[in-house]
Length: 257
Image 1 (tube, rainbow, N blue to C red):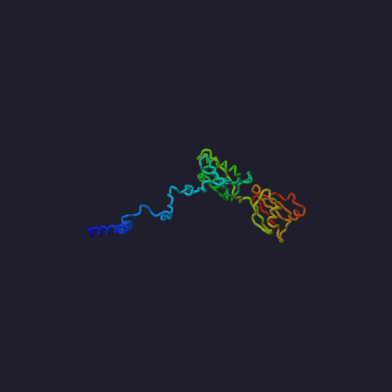
Image 2: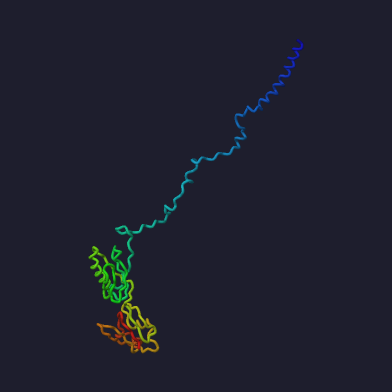
């Protein structure tokens, strides 16, 4: 009985010590995990990135600056078109003199409206004719541009309904006069409207030091005959142009002996 009492007394004394040693082991057991992360870890977590859907729409839409004109600018209007939908053809200047008579070596532009196969450029041959598609040889020298256009229109009416023809003198090569003899710059000279003998001589530098300015004459063919017109250069310079200072015609020749 005494021995049993001692064992109970020892057990009662060791019970607190045994229970204190068992608690730390239960807390450090690997099977017991913490239910929530420490407060310090949650505070240091980085913020999550926004979803694509949360991105502002203004940064995703490009600005179409090329399609919309800025203030003060206007868009160029489309080119005007004819009834057929094609752009209008560039027009050329007509001959400055409606009564001009076509001559040899002149360059003509024949335009048939909306008929490109009949529109062409031609130079008047020495025989006074030009060659056109389908129409062959046509007399041009001696006619005005209007008369030649009427002639071409009449011939084209056999192939085209109501043809519209325009004739333009692009280069005038037949209206020249010639200066020969003792003159500073002899040769051909383009003839302008109402050019006189004194003007032609002045443009050519006048008679040379070996020429006779009082015996100048102009040769002109009239009705198949050569006619001479005298001209005194010294008198015209001293007293002013007189009746001798005639207006020149194409093909006239001024000779300074």
